[in-house]
Image (cartoon, rainbow, N blue to C red):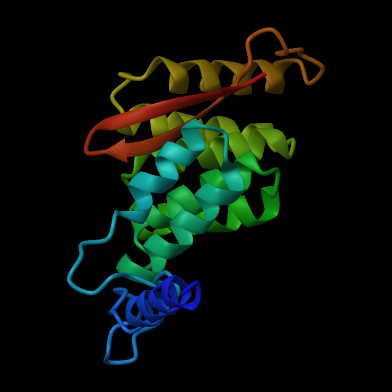
Length: 188
């Protein structure tokens, strides 16, 4: 009689094993999470993601987001300027300068690209050209952004006194967040 409870237990286990578990779909679906864009879903704008990552000082991740934006939108002035800003933040001054020069060539009225190009030129010791670039940015901005005015002042001070120490004032760069909105990034 002791075999009967075991037989019932074994029968119930076998019956449970035959029940559907909701595992892989019958059409042979993939057991792993999706690795690319989900079809039918809108993707998040790479520029917006990149700007948020820049604000969080995650420059490598921001650079990747900007490259995704370039793949989606092409190398627009916004994308070129953002790529230049990320490279500037990573200390890749040569790459930043090349990208920002492309951006100002693409759109000669794009203020953030002019300003960030000036910051790169300041970092590389090209103070005269930096002051000219900051003057252009300041004129295009109609003098509305204090950071550009401060950048111009620092560039002019460096021309007059190359040993001028601006460590207490910080250095500035602008990153465009949207139409008419700029995020001011400072590095000390």
